[in-house]
Image (cartoon, rainbow, N blue to C red; front, side, top):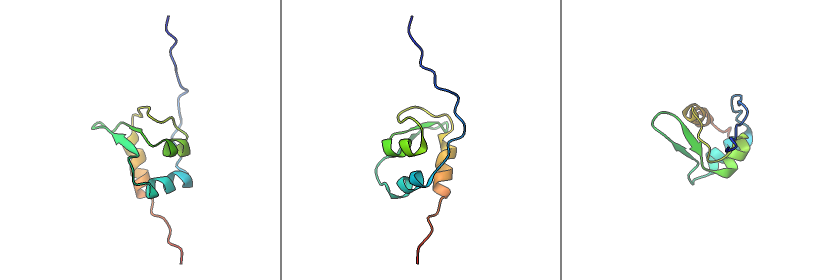
Length: 77
């Protein structure tokens, strides 16, 4: 009988400063977003900073992308 891998039910993903810095500064592909709002994180550094597994489909990734896009870095004088 095959062994099923089951991850614990995750709480909401917490966006930290490292993840926001990667989101703003990285120019290569970071996510793959599907039409239904689900998607997967393809950037391993971003996934590590968010505390999620890379290349695993997340159901509501569009909401996470909206939160990351809403971040405006503070300008230093």
